[in-house]
Image (cartoon, rainbow, N blue to C red; front, side, top):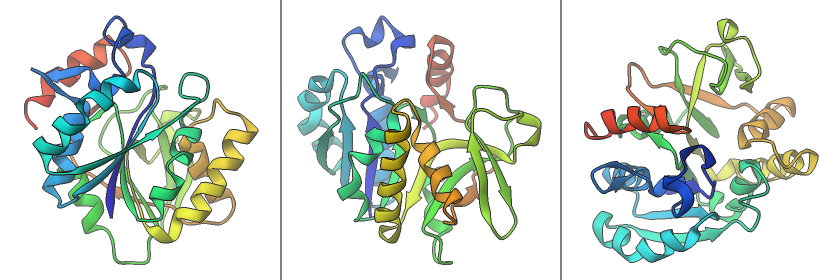
Amino acid sequence: MIGLVLAAGAGRRLRPYTDTLPKALVPVDGEKTVLDLTLANFAAVGLTEVAVVVGYRKEAVYARKAEFEAKYGVTLTLIDNDKAEEWNNAYSLWCAREVLKKGVILANGDTVHPVSVEKTLLDARGKGQKIILALDTVKTLADEEMKVITEDGKGVRRITKLMDPAGATGEYIGVTLIEPEAAEELADALKATFERDPDLYYEDGYQELVNRGFTVDVAPIGEVIWVEIDNHDDLARGREIACRY
């Protein structure tokens, strides 16, 4: 199993920081970035190989590749997303379809979270699950969050931002464990998703899997402080909590 980071997005709501940097390289703790924190988490759970999907301002990631490898004791493979500024991240994850065959812990490049999330996902393995989503069942939800409805014994029934928060089981935090056995089916679902609408999220690919009868499981992360950094308020919050991790 290896680490996988989606770091191709432009992060326009974080300008001017993202005028010259991808969102994953915006500092959140001194010089540390979200990518730093994620690589540290992966290293802490024994992952020594990491793939990073890059696109917008990818040269900034290429420039720091050797530094990241030395600092965190990992080998980085950078995967180019040629449509990063045109299409949404269903295509971005599909770009890593060959990497999925190794089994991955996937982390969004804008999620500040502790290593306990990766540990929770790894501890949840072993019961035949092929895909396990990290789920926050504690947080009070609003309209913007990626909300999930689950059903006992059947896993995810629905995953979308477009639902009443009151009906959701919890929020998907942007970290997933994907076993090698799921790689081909997930890649096919992602392809069907972005071919239907290139603006769709990879979570819409998860929904496509569910619609096909594939079981997508979840692992509740407990009372964890984390944030997805989309805008300047999120960045301020990320900088408050990143120093703890």
